[in-house]
Each structure stands twice: as C-alpha cells, then as structure tokens.
Length: 282
Image (cartoon, rainbow, N blue to C red; front, side, top):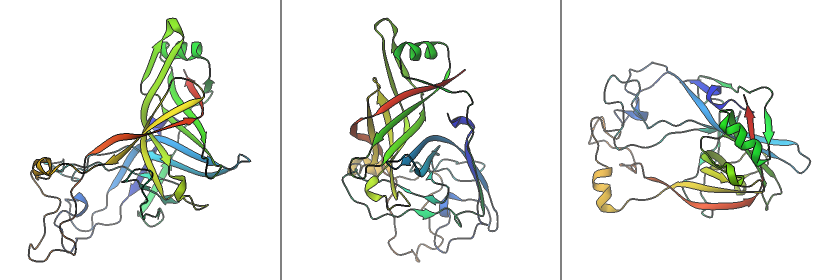
C-alpha cells in the first residue's frame, strides 16, 4: 500500500536561460542562470501486467499546481489560469490527453533523462496493509479512521493487458445499516492502451473513480473544452503579468499567440468489470 502523501518526485531544473521572444517564458520570473528545485507529492499509481502477471510498466500521477509564476514575491497566480501536473514513469513522461478517448492525438512520451538537471523519485509504502473485500470490514475500517487506498484491477480487451490502479480513498459513503458503501474519489491515472507500443504508454487520462461493489468500477475522464466566445472575453483577459508578453512586440515567434488555457471538464465515462478492494492500515 503506497503512502501517497509521503511519496514524491523532486527535480532540479537546468539553469534558466532567457527566451528569445517571451518575457515570462514558462512562468519563470527569476534571472538567467538560476536553478530551482521542485517537489510534488503523488496522487495515483498504475501498473500494467501481461497475462502471466509480469510487470510491463509502472506509472504515477503527480499533484497539480495552478500555473503560478515562480518564484515571485507577488502576483503569483497566472491569469488566465491553467493546471499543470505531471504523469511519469521511471524513464519517461507520457502526455495527458487533450481529447476524448476515441479521438486520436499525435503525441509521444518524452524521455525523463535530460528533462531535468537532476531528479529523485521517492515512493513510500505502508507496512502490514490489509485488503478488504467485505462490506462490514470496510464500514468498520472507515468509522475507525483507518488510512485507506482503493485498488481497482481491470483487463484491457484489445491487448489483454491487466491494468492495476491504486489511489487514496478521499471520499467514502456508507450505509452501515443496509451493508452499502461507495468509494468516489480521484484523481486516478488511466492509460490509453491504444498508444502502448510494448515499452511506453504515450497518452494517459486524468479521471475520477467510483465503485459500490467489488466486481465493477466506473471512471469519469477529464479533458479540456473550448469556452464560448463571450466567455473567452473574460477568461482570456490577463491580470498582472501576462504569460504571453513579448520582449519585442514587433518580433513575435511563429504561431503567435498560442492558445490560452481551456476549462477542464469531466464527462466521458467508462464502466468496466473489475476486481476492487479497499486497502487499510491503522
């Protein structure tokens, strides 16, 4: 059982170099040559296994930030605001989907090596965890205040690969009198198995999970959507620094201006046969 709140990814950036066009490239507001450390905790894990049970891949989802300027003394939040979060493997960084699962995106995972000057992956676990697959035990564990993760295992029909997800139980619903429970929580990390090439999953989905039985799980997937034109009038209006401010307005880069952040919504659902359990420790 993973202790997600104590597990983390820490990187040290390469020394910052000024962008030839943008004044606040990457939201960085320091000076050339500075190098930052960034640490984020982990929120979910995904493991792929073949039919014999051999592990093929392990992926993690990191905690997000709201695209702040770093490291600033004021005007920390970028407006327009977007979300930044990073999925990763121990050797690569897949791409978070920007479209529905049936829509193809031409994306590739990028190598983790070289992305940062240095990095550390620190996975902490809880000893003596117990898997609960009986409603009464889940009720008792919840009311006792135990630390809980959920585990959901399903099989991808197209590839035959088993997908195991582990994620904290942030919300639990109970009807103790009638022996009912419901986990509804997130985020979780879902692999787009259509992009699996035997080494990497190139696209992943951020989703939430829910289950109230041990043999099925539902996921609701997140993706950006375009706001109506009348909403973009205020949504795209910078306040304070403008992330897209140019050093020389007469010398824009090709394709300027890039798209502003889009709202993120949860809509597409997957309802899958699964093996669910609640993991608990004191």
